[in-house]
Image (tube, rainbow, N blue to C red; front, side, top):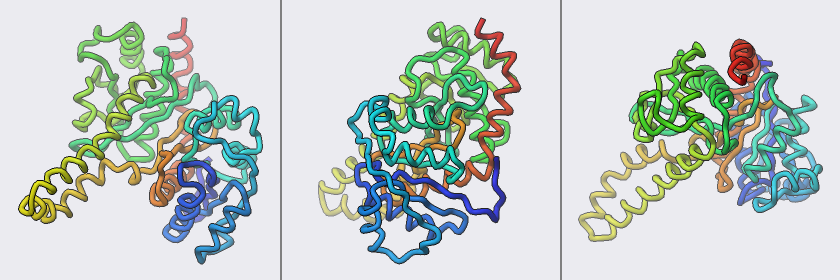
Length: 347
């Protein structure tokens, strides 16, 4: 259910998740409440450690609370094993606050697989959603493109991809304000007969779905900005995501190498620094914080393990937007609209 503009949104933050927890998580929470009047934060984790970190700041104690959770799920643990063995972890405890209504959304920079598994186990699925999906935004020549799925589901059926398209379309419309988002299906060619069996069958479903489906797209189309939502299985999507994340590091290295070749080159790079910084900003994960897990019966956002305080803040902002938009209610309605069609497609 959406919340009004004057109501506070409470976000449960896994303070022990991430490579630099809880330092960056606490600093991110402080930045969030200082810059956003509509957000309260509940830091979930080892209370003594979190409180010691909070002592470094002056803050409104009515807007940042601490919820004790003694266990921590580390980055290298098996997701399902960790959830089973550590029901009192900061990750699981934070999601439970959402389930009980004590929080409106959950964010974590912790173990990605564990966040996905715990979100599904704790929050459940939205009615009629076959599989939840995670999507990521990509900078393009004109605005952004969202790709679903980028790692939640390595093997997919046509029905799954159809529902990813529905959920991605809702997200692009209600979070990014894109009217009637254009949907593309990632394949090895533009023709509807190109691709493996799943891709060809998915094309037929999308063609009849009522979505603004424009057909197959290729890898070169992702950053053109002509498509708003691109659908693929999580195996392919995760490879695309990890490759895109490497672009920023490559560009920075290239600029540094160029500057190191001599004083004149250094001067050229220095003169263009402001422009370069603005351009590269679009490639920086910190600017969009994390990826939404759509299809679970709650709001769960997964951040990069290296999330900075700024990235944590942007995750919280995205979670607030989703809560205020009532994104899950809209997804449930749209999925229900295609329920009969989806059921028929499974036969």
